[in-house]
Each structure stands twice: as C-alpha cells, then as structure tokens.
Image (cartoon, rainbow, N blue to C red; front, side, top):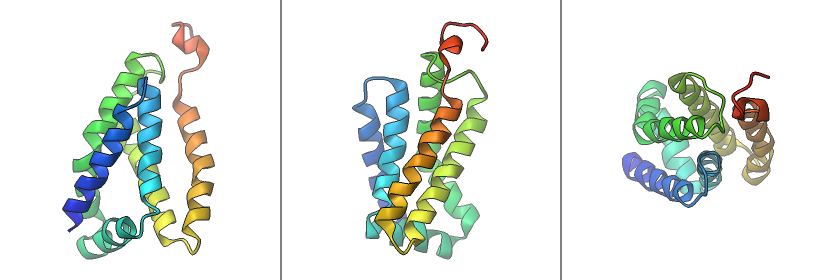
Length: 144
C-alpha cells in the first residue's frame, strides 16, 4: 500500500514539475505539490503516519529517497545549469531539501489543523528556497 501511494504521489509531483516553464519553477512547484498532497488524509495515513511507524524512520526514508531523490537532484542540477541556483554540491542540497520537506510533511500530517499548518509551512518553504536561489550578481558570473 505504501509503495503504491508513494508511486501515485511521485507521479503527481512529477507532472506538476513537468508543466513548468523553467527549472526553478519546476523545483518549487513540485515541492509545493508534494506539500499540498500531504493535506490528503490518505497520504497522511499511509505515507506519513503508518509508513514510518511500521517500517521505522530509516526504511521509510530509503523508500522516500527511491521515489524522489533522483528527481530532486536533476531539478537542482538543471536550476544550477540555468544559473537559477548558485553553484553548490547537489547531493547535499538535495538531502537538506528533502529532509526539510519531509519535516514539513510530518508537521502537516500530525497537526490538529492540517489546512492552517499547510498554509503556515509555505512561508518557511519560501524562505528556504530563497536562501539558495542565485542572486542577480551570481547569474551574471560575478561574485556578490
């Protein structure tokens, strides 16, 4: 059940990203689509509550990585290549971004007011993304 739900969710997130006009928009829209899906009671129960409880955190994270990490890394690489993200280690950024999104997803799934928590998470996610977005000077090849 977990694998099927993760596959469905990963396909949905991938579709959202594929519809975007540039790598930055693809990355941010995909991440938001993932968090939006975390409001769904089915995703909450199967993916975010039962999955980690039954399998343990390490096994759950491995399954999560199998569905998302390659796509996150490809999106980050594409955004770096387009000068939309400052050059940096892709593996580290992907791991940090996925950990932050998993934490936000868990907050949403366990919140008394899921919708309000989902809205609150947006501000934090926006600041996280802005923290690694290339500045105009970086985009022109100069150092800020």
